Amino acid sequence: MLEGIRMRLKGVRKFSPAVKRFLKIPESVRFTPSDVSNLELMEDAYRILWRKRHVYALEIWKCGEEQYFVSSDRREGLEELLLRLSAVYPSPRMKISHVPLPEKECFVSAGFLRLEGTPYTLRSLSDFSHDPLLHAVTAAPEGTVIQFLFRPERIVAERPLVESPVYRLRIAVAVFSDDWRRAASSCDAVLRSFAVFSSPSSELVPVVPKIMDPGIILRNMLERRFVFPLRDSFRVTAEELAAIAHFPGDSSDTRHRRQAPADSP
Image 1 (cartoon, one colour):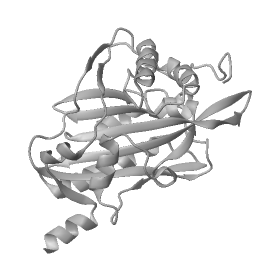
Image 2 (cartoon, rainbow, N blue to C red):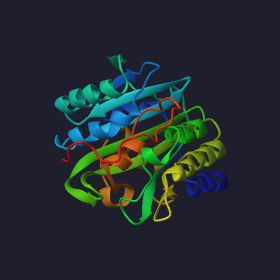
Image 3 (cartoon, rainbow, N blue to C red):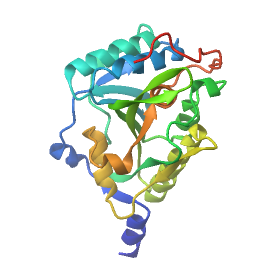
């Protein structure tokens, strides 16, 4: 009993494959990029998607091999997102696929990130000499899921020289493991790795709820739903979203990016 209490206090619960019968997991596309990427087009992609008003999800699954998944709440949203991603990652391979949930019972720890500080001041791609997302992905062990769930907000942020579209973003992480302590420590480590995007004015803070069952977080991740949008998500600009929500690219220098797009939303 004491072991079970310790596990709960660390934000861990048991996972059974049977839970899939009770979930409404939307259709997703497994997206396999080529070896070449052009991350500088990511901001333009999100400026265009902002006009479409869909809910989108990008997911990184580290299960045997690193797998990437794309989904949306509407088929037209999924098609539009795949079109924009294909410009960033030329000649990708795409197929309808189920996400690779564990086939046996194990433990799962799940959490999300909260923004503290001044909105719209997270670091963007122009602040890095490499793909910053590699920092988080490298920290993720086998059995990790990193999800970026985002939707356009009907506002823009005033930035120098340009208005920037605003999105609501949820960054959630789940780690499956045969060892509940490893699941808890790994989930916390992956969430903390996103501190690379923090700035002197704003900080991404890990949240692994002790009262909210981690199974609820996992369910919301798998069903790709915003359930507590004011609690487990925050607003970002298209530039901030581009830095965070993408698939890991090469490590080429990103600081040559133009500072202002040719057109505003």
